Image 1 (tube, rainbow, N blue to C red):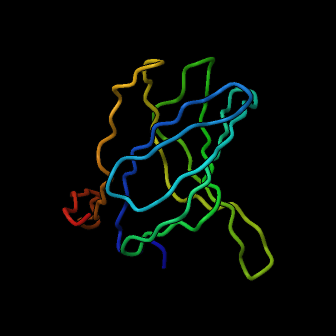
Image 2: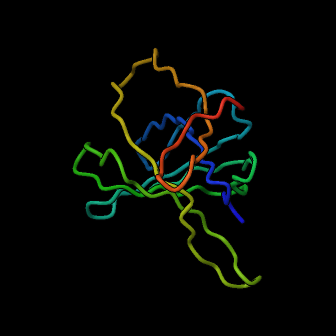
Length: 140
């Protein structure tokens, strides 16, 4: 069962939204997951975008190769900072296509043309019990 251990991954990612709907992106160190092209579009007050990933497996947390879809509220250039949705398109029972929520993401503004932006390492977190607290796992 996916992430049944309660483990969660924090994957810092920097996305640059280009004209024409293209996205350039990169992730923080210590995660063996390739990322590729992406695309974005605005639908009303929603910003929807996807990034092609090579997939990864870490303990019982996995993401398959394919598109990782992001959805957030957007008002002009201002994005909702927390509680945004990450989904993948998956097949169930060999034929049924469905959207599966695989996590959430937060958005933080970065100054345009700031070449000094560094990303922290990717981390895994493990649930400590029923109270919902998490502790950092030193095992990258």
